[in-house]
Image (tube, rainbow, N blue to C red; front, side, top):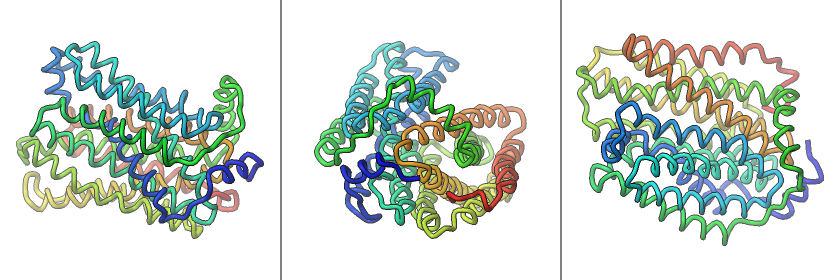
Length: 407
C-alpha cells in the first residue's frame, strides 16, 4: 500500500538507486553498529576475570546486551515512524559511543553490566537505518537496496567475533570497546552531515506501541516472515554458539586464533544478501525462500560429515558455515523486502516486530544449543539445528500462493 506519508517521506529523503554511495554508507554504518552486540561474546572469560565476576555471572555480559537490544527493538525502533529519522539515529549513535567508552573504562562489574544494557539499547540504531534505506529506494529496486544494506549488517555480525578475539589477543579486551567508541563518535558526525531529512507524521507513543500488536494480528506476511526467520536465525545462533566449543574440544583442539579464522570463513555467506534482494525484486522471493531453508538444513548435515578432528571434517564444517550463513542472510533479506512492502508509514513498527520475534528465536536456540552440546555433543546439536529450518520449511509449505502478494 502507498500512503500520503509514504510520498512525503520519499520527497524529503530523495530516492536512491541500489549502487549509490548512500547505500554503501548505510551498509557500512549498519555493520559497524550491529558489531557492538557481538564483540563481548568471545571475551566473557577475560572480562569476567578482570572485573571479578564468577564464570556463571560472566554470562550476564552477553545476556544483558541481548536484553537491551530486545527492549530497544520493541520500544525504540518503532519511533522511526514518528520521529525525524536522522535525529533519532544520531542520538542513538551518540549514546552508543558513550556506552562503549564506559565499558572500555569500567573498573567495576556493575558499571560494565550497566553499560552492556545501554550497548544493546543503542545498537538498535541499525534497525532504524534499515527501513530508512527502504524509504530511500524506489519500489523496483527496494530489494536490491535492502539486500546491499543487509549485507553490511551481516558482515558486521560475522566479523565482530573474530575481530574482537584478534584485537584482544594483541591489545587486551579494553581496546575493542575503546576503538568502537571512537568509531561510533565519528559515525555520528558523518551521518549527521550526510543523511537526508525524513519527517514522519507524528503519532502518540502509546498508540504507536499499541498498533504493533494490531500489525502482528492483521498482517499474515509479517507473522509468517517473522516465524520463518526466527527458525533460521535460531539455527544460525545455535551453530555459532556451539561450533567454537566443538572446535576447541579434544577432537579438533583449535586455539582461539584458529577459531577466529574459522569464523572469518563464514563471512563469505554475506554475499547472499544482495543476491537475494535482486531475486526478490524480480518476483522470485518464494523460490529464494525455499532454497534458503534447504541450504540451512543441508549445512547441518554437511557439518556432521567426516571423522571428528580430521581435515575433511574441518573442511566440511567450514563449507557448512558458509552455506548456513548464505541461507540465513538470503531469507532475512527476502523477509524484510516483503514486510517493507506492506506500507512506508509503518516500516519502523514492522521492522521492530519482525526483528524482535526472530531475535527471540535466536536467543532461545542459543540456550538450547548450549544444553544440547553439553548433553549430546555435536551430533545432538546438529540434529536440532537441522530441525529448525525444516520446521520453517514445513510452515512455508502451507503458504497459499494467491495470497502471497508481497514475496
